Amino acid sequence: MDTDQLIRTLAADNPHRAPRVGAMLTMALLVAAPLSILIFATFLGVRPDVMTAMHNPFFDMKFAVTLSLAIPAIIVSLHLSRPEALMRGWGWLLLLPVGLLAVAIGSEAMMAPAMPMTMRLVGKNSRWCMLAIPAMSLPLLAGALFGLRHGAPSRPVLAGALAGLLSAGLAATLYASHCTDDSPLFVATWYTIATAVVTAIGAAVGSKALRY
Amino acid sequence: MTQSQETEFKALVLRSHYGDPAAYRTLLSRLAPRLRAYHKRKLTMAGRGVEEAEDLVQETLLAIHLKRHTYDPDALFTPWLHAIARYKLIDHLRRGRASVREVPIDEYHDLMAADDHVARECTRDMATLLDRLPTQMRLAIESVKLEGKTVSETATRYGMSESNVKISIHRGLKALAALIARRD
Picture 1 (cartoon, chains in turn brown, orange):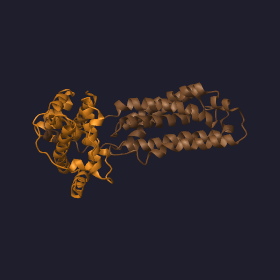
Picture 2 (cartoon, rainbow over the protein chains, first blue to last red):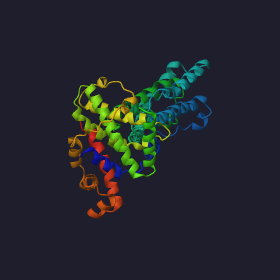
Picture 3 (cartoon, one colour):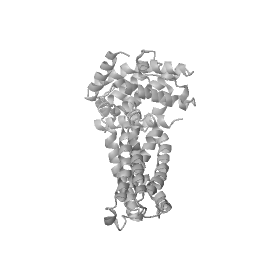
Picture 4 (cartoon, rainbow over the protein chains, first blue to last red):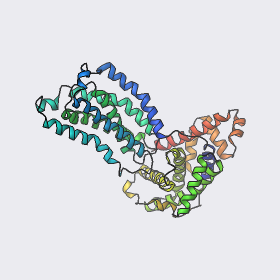
């Protein structure tokens, strides 16, 4: 086929209007979310003392941290779905959860310790945490990659990593309501490891799936 | 690149977006020689043959078409265009196992440096890939592309509804792009 023929074919398809990447990502995440919630409801569930826990600022802090990961990751991944987009000026958004965690760890260190540091760090749920966050992330990650495939990221590995970050952030938000370990030290250790695993999977799959 | 080119391209983009088919065809016809010149130059700089350029031009046009919803009308058009052309170039060189470092650093101004109207008649890639599409998609595309039939003429000829022809063309183009992405 010569190029003029291709142009004629493309022109015939001009009336087709594709949805925006944001709309596609939202839809894909909404389809995937019930699966993650199902995993949550089947194997985990909200912790029984949630009503009292809500008055503990460190419990609430977990949601601030996970959402400050998920929401900026969604924003940056949508930004990167434009081919000419650069990370410059956007990367700091991804440091928000790190900053929040640092503040939380600092304030916990200033309080009289309720438990020894090793207890707070290791917690009771580290193994669950490492298993549950990636497991609940996977449906969301698949959805995020599906939605972002609609975009045109110039760096598929980076875009895939962001899909991993955003799905880990969302899954960790669910997980935070189950886990009874509220110490920021626990969050900084185990949530981070779980997030890193999901991010690596996202980058690996993205390097293939997000090519266009 | 001149300011007037950006303005001209952008006007065509906006008119195509609001459903002017002639504007879209004009836009793609203006872009093709630009892309040809760009890809030929970059392939030469990477030590590759210019005969690969036409495939690359077509892949870039297809990507521009299928990803045009990622263009933000408030932004400049040229950087968007350049990003896609460059992405397709890198992808192409990588497939040939050249390293990314061989891609010469370039600015989007490079894209607007020159036109090249010397197209090779047939390119192997698109034609072979087209043969691998499901029949209905292939027929719809071939009718529109080879014989210059309109969507409604194609519909009558194959006893399909017009929306069916449109969907077949669109799905066919997406399938083509997927075949290109999967090929190694």
